[in-house]
Image (cartoon, rainbow, N blue to C red; front, side, top):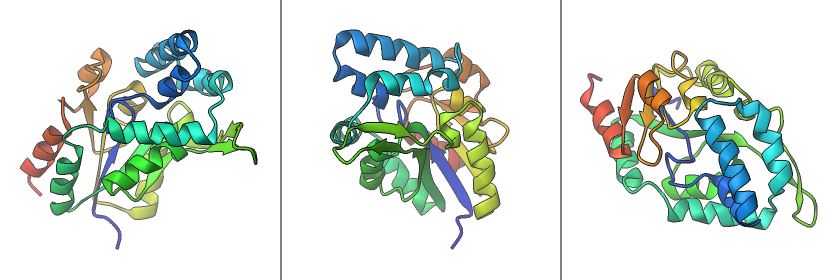
Length: 218
């Protein structure tokens, strides 16, 4: 069955309180963490383009397969506290959740499994036979500026839902305004002024997202 209503969530600083690439950098020491964290914040706040840092951050950090799995467990440890209950309410009301993220598929999949989310649109990492970093899925739209609106367009073509709602905290999520039927800005972990100003709605918990959508006329 094709879902009639899709709710798409960003992962980092939305479904979970961490930024995966920053936590990968933390494993390399304080100096690496500071460098990567600054780049991530600049991109999420729209001061630089995602394209300009995507490969650069990974080339600096070079996460291994084992480290990606470790970050997956950190996502679960820091899951947004109202996420499980909010998703249950949304599913009961006919919404199908999925994840659209500029993060890394192998790290996000454990969180998706924990939350019962079947579909993850994120960027796959590549590893050699020893599990060392060997590149990433550079053609995936989520690794590029304007990629999340393209993913939403592709979902409309594939699944033909009546409605798509996007929830996220960063500049790449804000780009989906106009492509999604509703863009909900998220501010529990980081409240970004541009996202707050541009969002159709703005919330500080995923429970508020459920209340917002269930409260509207279906």
